[in-house]
Image (cartoon, rainbow, N blue to C red; front, side):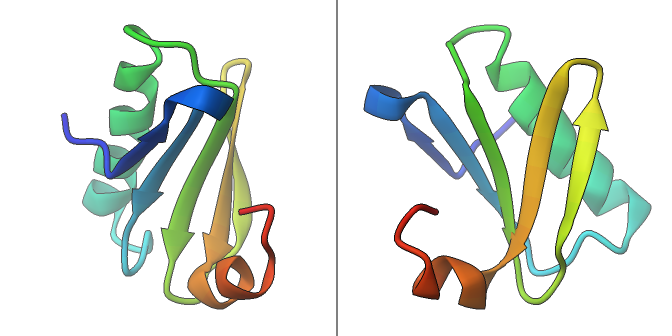
Length: 77
């Protein structure tokens, strides 16, 4: 599994994908984040996409899906 970004000092994991509309892509990106959590502490989960926005809940984990434009405007991403 490949993780795009992990910010150790804030325990944040970020995946980047053009779109999550394809079920295979969605599964790959979500599973990469979940696999990372088996090895390191992750408190904040995020997938950056071109224009999609949603919340994905996997067990007790909440993954925010945000469009790239929102990340560029919001310094909290």
